[in-house]
Amino acid sequence: MSVFLDACKLKKTEYTPVWFMRQAGRYLPEYRKLKGETNIMDLFRQPEICSEITVLPVRKLGVDAAILFADIMLPLQAIGVKLKIEEEKGPIILNPIQNLDDIDLLGDLSPEEHLDFLWRSIELTVEKLDEIPLIGFSGAPFTLASYLLEGRSTRDFVKTKMVMFGQDDIWDKLMVKLSTMIEKYLITQIKYGVKAVQLFDSWAGCLSREDYEKYVLKYTRRIFDSLQGYNIPRIIFCAESSHLIEALRSSGADLH
Image 1 (cartoon, one colour):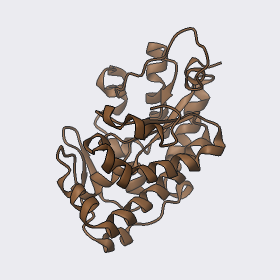
Image 2 (cartoon, rainbow, N blue to C red; image 1 turned 180 degrees about the vertical axis):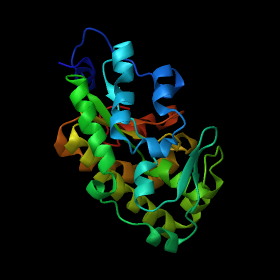
Image 3 (tube, helix red, strand yellow; image 1 turned 90 degrees about the vertical axis):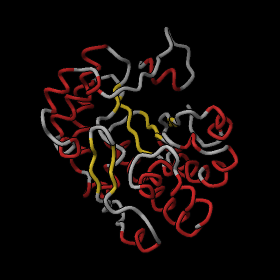
Image 4 (cartoon, one colour; image 1 turned 135 degrees about the vertical axis):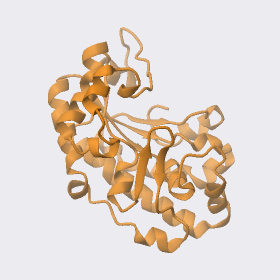
């Protein structure tokens, strides 16, 4: 049995798995060799290399689980968001959302058609991992919405909050669009073999508990509810979020 999966199910384990959130490229020279000069978004379209990158930490460190080598921007790119990822600045959105028409221009995610390279990467990775579980993931609606509205990483989230507090029609339409996309994205990851899924709501900690519960929680809960029948651990991650702990407990996640 997997120590990671047993811990997720609150079973007694020989030791407690600890999460170290660090991408392979931050510490493994083997990753840098595999990546070379390839643009990161182009690299994701090479399943054989991506599967090797995913299993590197398992082989080198003997960790209890692997996490899919992908990026939260992949499904956004698939539905028509124009973007690039810069080494120091992170994601840059070239067509940020400014009005309802911009949301209408986005397509609907057809996972099998739009992201075939990712599913092949998962299949190859699962074969190599044998009994070690693979964790799939997605960005959460609020975090993805913040990139789409701000156009890039930010620390103040001014544009995001202006829409969230003052333009309900844009906010609700965008969050529904993203929630639907994420549901399809995660369900397809499960279909191809991931054994747990995680929502990265990296930036939701910028919100008060009241605002999180009013503007964000129902969309997060909707996603986790859609995964109920798959009998795999559902995890939510949110940085600097101790004040949100009670809200996160009610999100439908098994772990937070």
